[in-house]
Image 1 (tube, rainbow, N blue to C red):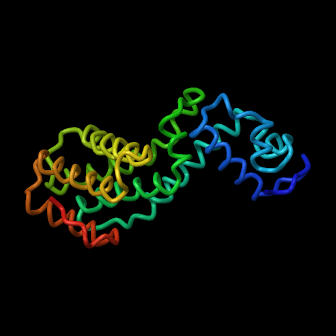
Image 2 (image 1 turned 90 degrees about the horizontal axis):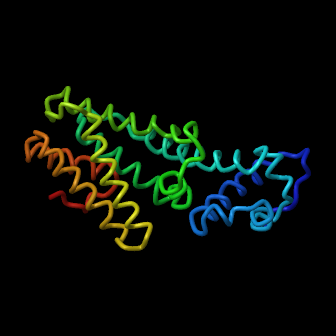
Image 3 (image 1 turned 180 degrees about the vertical axis):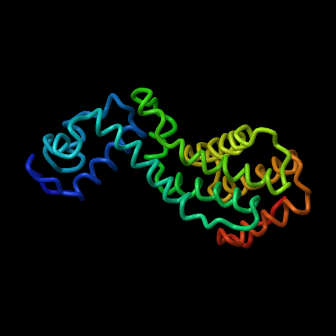
Length: 218
């Protein structure tokens, strides 16, 4: 438990703990259970700490989403740009998966809770933009014939999100969730014009770079 802080103090450890605890309460129990008193009790601080660090509960909820998307953006930014654009797209998907499973409470708030308003809803579009750009590189390289990169990127995102949700719900074992997404991505590449052998080589290269050499693409 963390010690109490005064309204004049802004301890980064308390701020982080408030975000993590708020994310857990939102994800596991719902927004009706996220109250000042409950949150302060979970963290072991005063109710004034929420105002010290965030200015209020609405601002805290916004910051929970922003923190989640910031961590996702960091995972995506860490993916090195490869000369093989198809492999790069697979690696972006692996980064999404790893961010989600490393931060399950934040992920649920980001994608399974209603945004507070329109301004809150736009957080995170830059990470989707990285996937759209990756698909566009595949099209420019002649690997895919998708007329609208954003449409294929949405299909990849949707399949990845669904499999992450199944894993977080305990309905799909962790190794199978990621493997299934990679296989789905490979099928989408082939359906959108990529040569089957070229797609298999790119997926195999992505698996090696992701540190999972034992996985075999289908």
